[in-house]
Image (tube, rainbow, N blue to C red; front, side, top):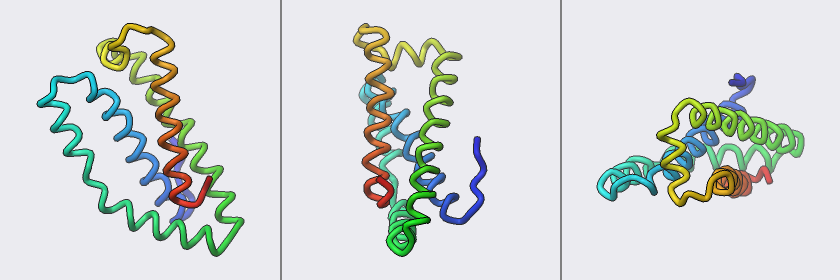
Amino acid sequence: MTTPSTWLEALVKTYVGDALAADFYLEIATSLPTEVADVVRAVLSETGHSQFVVAEVQAAVTASQKQRHRLALWSRRLLGEAITQAQYVLADHDELVDLVMTSGEGLTQMTEFFDRLQRTHMSRMQELGLA
């Protein structure tokens, strides 16, 4: 995984990394028993620290187009790394693939899974001012 070289990159990486991991777990939670899924959702709903990151990044990118462009590229790189990691995890754990692909639609469902991860990432980037 890529190491951030600035404070803002570290903030974006933490925000994006936490969010993408949460998205991944929430996708899997939809296939778990209700009691377990509820616990997963409750744990992942704690996002109070993210408002600090949003405010810091928004202020920085409003003040500097250069920062905005750098951090936008950085966030895309992080998304690529996260998707690659998710693919590795799924490739190593057939039981997770079974959870993600509960409807039995095969590759189409897997493609939709990764499309949803990308859409939620884009929505976060808009919130940060990076889209």
